[in-house]
Image (cartoon, each protein chain N blue to C red):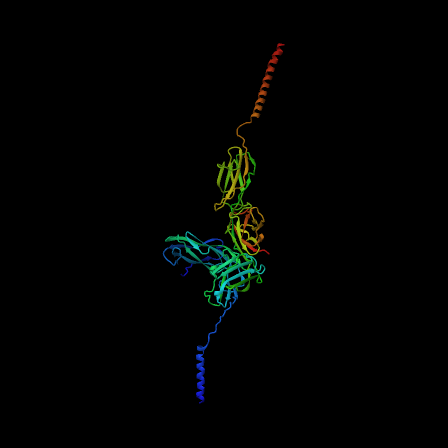
Amino acid sequence: MKRIIGFALMLGLVMSTLCAPIFANDIPGSTTVSNVPPEATSVAIKTMADVNENTLNPQTQYKFIVTVRDNNNLTDIENILLKLYTNAAGENAADAVENHYTFLFRASDNTWTEIGPGQFNDHLTTGLCVKPSELSVVSDEYKFVVNLSSVTTPTTSRGWTAKWIVTDDNGSSGNNTKTFDVNEYLMLMIDDAKLTISAYPGQNDLQPTENPTIVTVTANYNFNIQCKLSGDLIGSTFRDRIPMSNIKAAQDNTHTGEIKLSDNYGNLWSNMDYGEYIEKDIYWFADIPYPLMGDTYTADFYVRAIKYT
Amino acid sequence: MAPIKFVCGALGLSILLALVSIASAEVQVGVSNPPNLDNLRLVAGQGTSFEIGVRNYSVGENSRFKIENVGLSLVFSDNEFILAPGTEKDVTVTVLPIMIEGVYKGEISVSVYSLEVQGATPIVPVTGIPLNITVGEPAPILVSPENNAVENTPTVTFTWSQPGPRLSYSIQIDDEASFTSPYVYENTDVVENSFTYTFGKSNEYYWRVRARDNLGNWSAWSENFKLTIALEKPGRLPIVPLILLICVISAWILLIITKMRSKHFGGTRKSLK
């Protein structure tokens, strides 16, 4: 009897469960899914070989990577702004090659743009910038490929800040920052591969046919231009010699700032302002001793730029 | 399309700052697409692109590269760039459509024209650039006759000194300080550092000497010395003394005649008295 009662109860319970939807009433109403602000969950600066880097060389490409998270999916992301600035200049300074850069990714037309200081994406390699291939996800990476100008201010102790600002289509935003340093940069070019002088003993102030030697310097700090000789000029046949002090370098053909060369570097220009492609003309002069054996005399000259201290 | 590469670059610092042709290429256009490379023979279709690799083989120095072509209508994706030591860069080369089907011989060159150090190193060393001074033979030093000398004899011996051994000398004698050809005299093969010359007439002359070494290189000319030749004409007596002599003789003869006459006529007069 107990077993029959138990079975009936079980059957009633199952039937009531199965039939409940049939007899339920619809309840009218609506649900609103609220916007979730985007987040820049992590940021990184990497070399093109994907190695993390905190100290950047000017004129070199780096990836500025931000991982964006938006719980409404990345389709909501409208733009990403990347600002690079020295702490001395501050985030809101005007764009300048020395201390402030602004780049923008705009999702509406998938464009990567340098807002400044370059007018033609001078410091942004748009072809290498990367956005997520799939936007129906909540998180992925956006990569700006940036190369800083050769006159970017060098710093130590994390003097630069990179700031990513991610904005969605509701105007909500999130940001993240990373500090880094920029290395000193110096490039020097010389337009002469050799200097040639034809002379007779006793002649003075002879100039090589190549005069002047054009030295072009790009640096992000003030610098000196220096030159020296490898030593006395030695005759190839008779081993006679022209003392290196008989060779002089000057800033113009009227001997301004002239220095006698030695095997130690001497300043020809001092405390030159940093900048790009700064050209200076070096005029060389030679005094030929008398007497001197007829011969071909050779030495190497050196020109360098060095940080002004 | 698999990239076709050939690698060229700076072989150390020895070619620094020199324009170095790395690869001569023969480009055949219109035969193959994608292009291929066989012993530097590039075969490419019009308007197609291929890649070349440029490597910096130098040690310790960044190098700035410049890539150009001669005789071919090619466009490079990057003409100038900087490579760190041991790194390589792919450059896309596009064959311009103006290259109609055919075989072209040209040259792709890579030049390294500067070194660069970037990073924390504040000093930029640049490889030495040769300074060559070609010094000609030292000019001889004239010894005698000394400058502005006056010689009364027609035959004069010129001497000079010369630092270092020399093969021969050239001497010029002229009546103009500017030594305008033709000269009064010239000898380009004097083997000693002296020379004797006989002048034909009195005049003011100038002389100079230069030396030649065993390679045939001439020195500069010595400085010019002035020489005056003042010759006496032979067999010609001075007129004034001759006239005086004639006068004296004439006077003496006249005196004798006068004395003889006075002696002869004086005796007669005495006898007449």
